[in-house]
View 1 (cartoon, rainbow, N blue to C red):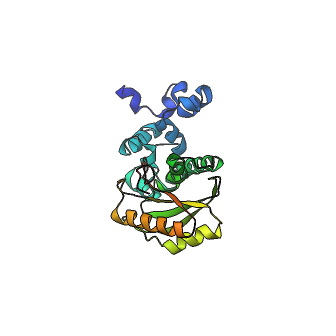
View 2 (cartoon, helix red, strand yellow):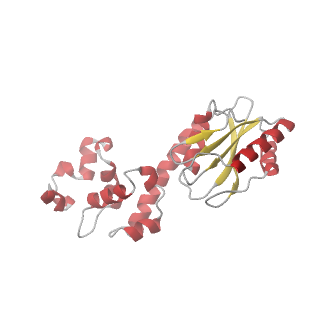
View 3 (tube, rainbow, N blue to C red):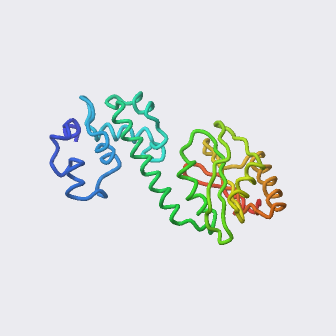
Length: 232
């Protein structure tokens, strides 16, 4: 096995090379490391593209969501054999995957539960290193009219203005709204500020006859719903 790993990809058996394996066995037969190796094309003098890909994924706990948070500078700085072109290929491919998921969610645009809201916003907010606050606007059939970013903040918080949220809802003639923001820390527990803005928005929405149906907090792999918890 040790001898096998020292071979370059060109010296491997034909069926074990990632590109050839994809052609003959289909894309589903490839591991994450093999798919990543196809993107970067080549490794370094000391390791093949597959071994370099395994190292990158190992540092990400073999989690593609974690890899999706890596920047071009992260990849270039930490991995010998990864320059601008390879780092750009990795980041661009993961962004395409994120956009594909977004488009799929847009096609299923009727909101029936908190999971539907999470499916809309997790691709947008899950990987961000800072907080953003968004509003989902619905018509009377609970179909999505629009989703608007209201504010953007730092690692630990963002400012949420009730007037801006209501203005956005009125401009889109929304029948109801759902609030959503992310916690980059991964902690799903709502803060006191989160609960205060939820209460304030809910009261303002009742006055304007634009009910706030829920407030969702998302991380890269989970979500919290005020409605599910009976807190709104």
